[in-house]
Length: 249
Image (cartoon, rainbow, N blue to C red):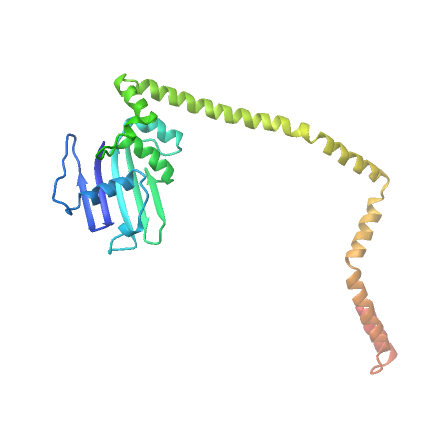
């Protein structure tokens, strides 16, 4: 049940808020009075396609917010990874650049989720429009309401959610068990490669010293060149040049 709707910068509406009590409500007016604009705003809350031409002149976006009383949808919200509450709040933003954002109970959601939620919140009927009434989800809800199956349906959905979670955990464990078996051949190949290196016969101290020497080979080369240049210089005596070479080494 829709309890409140707020509309900002949508078509000709600058800003309006309507609080709806329980009972039957009628909006009347002559052609052009804005009834279709109101229905269009409600349609955005239900997942209808956004049209940038409906963004008004008072900003870069149109915002429509609605609050619904729908305790029967707590299980659906949980299954959809959305905050489960008795009252469902929906916020739809349509930006002038073509983007659209959806929030359900202050959590960001997709238009697909909003459309699925909207089909369970409100039915908009038009002349000669029986399509939605004949769809299987709608007929299922009618049967559940007629048979007072809400509690049974919620228990089933909770059990189904637990089963899905257990199934996912089982698949993860199965993957962990299978992964090592698939790598046995590769691991055996690596073992053979390591054994062929005969690492137990390697003198690691000599190897480490050689590595250290190679890492500093460039520096040693530059130092020796500078020492040789100092010995060959003509501007100083031989002893002075030898002293320079010694300091470099």
